[in-house]
Every structure is written in structure tokens, then in C-alpha cells.
Length: 283
Image 1 (cartoon, helix red, strand yellow):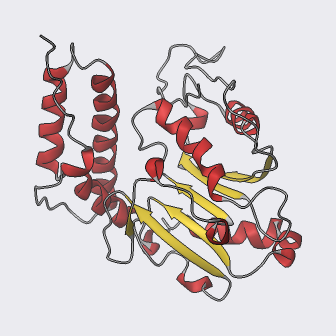
Image 2 (cartoon, rainbow, N blue to C red):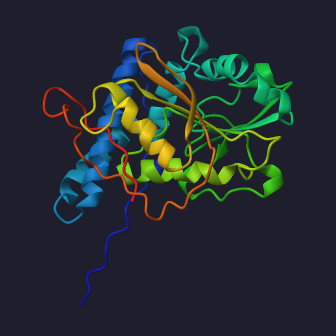
Image 3 (cartoon, rainbow, N blue to C red):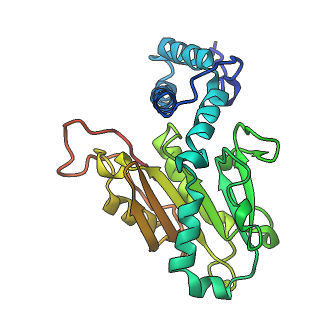
């Protein structure tokens, strides 16, 4: 008799607890770090469900006690407050104006922006004369943010395709390295064909700085090579702040990814030490 496998509980459903936390930068950062650790460990447990099912239950219980994804989103929303300079859309706007003037002049307005993982619906409100944003998230914190899982989101009809897809502090939150890779590949389906000259094909990517400066499996150069392999051959601009790495990529071509393989492999010179395990897998 085949044993029926227990259905996994989506993280999005772990949000029943009402948890309050101090509205301070230190407390917000601590909460977000803890949730990231739990989420990564949960992904490992689910990759080995038979051997780690007890630990998975413990993680889910702790996540629920914290408030689940709803708790994480509220902490992120506080961290992104404009008073703290956490709105990454400002960097994107500045880069568009300083590095993309010729492309903007030729592009149909308003620009259509898909804001994945949005914690606020008004990131681009100040630029509404030339930008129309569609904010989405797994667990929206505002009625004007659409509830949507980007990995399962179907690309819209051609007439509704986007000029810019924003993944600001999104892929680092995804626990499974394979899902991170699939998410990057999936972004390509939301643009007009690359031959369309009056539309943009830009990916705005933001990750915590240690993801590309202190990982065993990822560096800035490795990320650029990986992105180029899936068609993002033009890194228009990048910037490292004290805590974040910002990238604006252009999709120049759309190669078949069937034979593109990027495994989890330690980069020479990055062995050991107090490094993190952030990586992106494509296969």
C-alpha cells in the first residue's frame, strides 16, 4: 500500500498570529534576518521530507508564532519606509534618467512596470506622468497590491506586456536556489519581443550586498555571466551601497534555456571562512 504524502503547508498560509514588534531599525532588521534563516532552512527540509519532517514542523511552528509571511511583510514595509531611505525605486528612476535617456526618448509612454514583491503600492506614484506600475505580492499588505505568486503567474497578452520587471529584495527571500533561477528566467516572458524597438526590456534586480560579495557560490562576476547566459547580456548599470547591490539589466536576446546549467558549486577562492550560502541554480 502506497503511503499518502502529507500536503505541504504554503508559507503564505502561516500568518494567523498577530505579532507586534518595536518600530525601530534594529528590531526590524533582526526580525527580517530571522525569517530569512527560517525560510532557507524550511526549503532544505522540504528537499528531504522523509528525514527532516520533524524539523520542518518546528520551523513552521516558529514562523506561525512570529506571524508568518504577514509578519515578514510588515517588517519589510517598515524597513522600506522613505524616512529610512529604503525605497529602492529611487535608484531605478535615477538610473533611467542618467543611463537610459536615448532609450526612454524612443519608448512608448507611460512605461509599464511590474513591481514583484511590492510592500507598498505607491513606490512609483511620484512618476505617474510617465510610469504605470502594477504591484504584486504573495501576501499583500495593501488593497492596491495584487495577490499573485510570480513563479506561477502567466505572462499577459502582448498588448499588456511590461517595460520593466522589478525584483527588489525578492530572490534572496526565495528559499530554493532552483526557484531563484527559474524566477530570473521567468521574467523574460513578461516583455515584448526583443525586436520591439519602442518598448524596453529591463530587469531591475536588488539583493543584499553579501549575496554577491561574501557568498561561497556567488560573486558579482558570476551573476553577470549567469544573467548573460539567459539573454540579459547588457548590464546597464550597477551600484553597491553599504547593504545592497543594485542592477539594471537589459534583455538583448532570448535564448532557449533547456541546455543552460548553473549548478551549486563553490567558487575558487571562496572556500571556508565566515561566508554565506546564497546561490542561484539553473538547470
